[in-house]
Length: 428
Ligand code: FNR
Image (cartoon, rainbow, N blue to C red):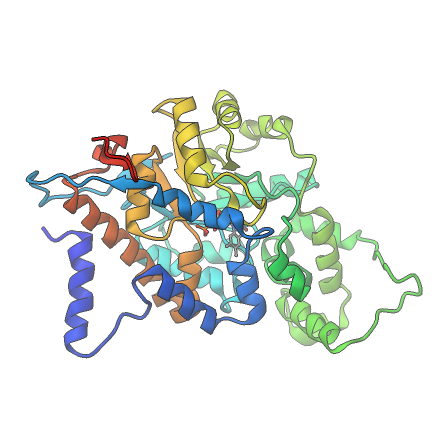
């Protein structure tokens, strides 16, 4: 039987005979370079940028370099099985697409392209709470393909309930509550451009499509920072107004005459994150949804233990791709500590720094049950739209499959800590 790796290699090499090249580069460095060229300055700052001096992003990658895979020979690996089940969701490979907000900065209808690509590739997509398309529409683009929904805990509890109910109705297989963004990190790339996508009406479609949010907008009192009531009119102010107007549901000209689009942005900025978030909020979740609950953004072993003690179904060990705290622990290092603390059973997903199939392999060997792919698929989107995302996913899975074959491994359960040694040591 031909595995995912050889299938992908054959497709590329056969097309190569006809003079065709893959739509996106198959190595990360070139993928990133081409994506940068294809993106606007503000789009690139937002997607590729990180917190502070970028140390957490670099640490996320450096952590992978501290481990080495030790291949084994002569183990008959003709049949390989990459499948597993996570919280009742069948995975064709141990990979899900991470929630990535404000994708419109990279491509129009980013969420729909991502949803269709995920469905075509057979990989679940975690819808972002900061989407550019309402979750119902994104779900419709996927048919019956698996999706989870991510939530940012708003200061308005009725909005939290409304978003959860919509996630259930949209067929979510799990609710992923992101904990690490109760305030936005210090992001110099965005700050230097004065660029916040939400302020331009990007990435707030889950809100503007929500009945509870609309109630909040209707009762919103405009908070004019300029006491004279006059806003300075600059070219950028006009551009922002057009962006806000265009991204609001409904017709452009009607929106332009209405105060609603601007009130929506102001309302959003006032309520979208909740620095008061605590374990008390999390304790209410079980009563509020029948979905499996996943907490994303856990980095400390004590937080992981507490999550499982509270009956949480899974955690995502993540530092948000190094976008929140500069000089934070690498996500892979946190994974090692957390797996050690909670033992082998609790479900752990890991993200932040996954770039290749070999990275997936190392994360699994260090105790992850699955990983999330983040920036790489956005880079595929930037270069070649839906097709670009599909190829990025296929490439990562192909390399994982080939790495398994070449290290003498037939299924995911065999990818254990024993297949690795710390790089630079001579221990067996
Ligand atoms: C994110 N991430 C994120 N996470 C989340 O829970 N909700 C969100 O809306 C977003 N938005 C978002 C936007 C952009 C542009 C990026 C790059 C990331 C974090 C994301 O889910 C994931 O944790 C990181 O992308 C993992 O890091 P790498 O591997 O992409 O570097």
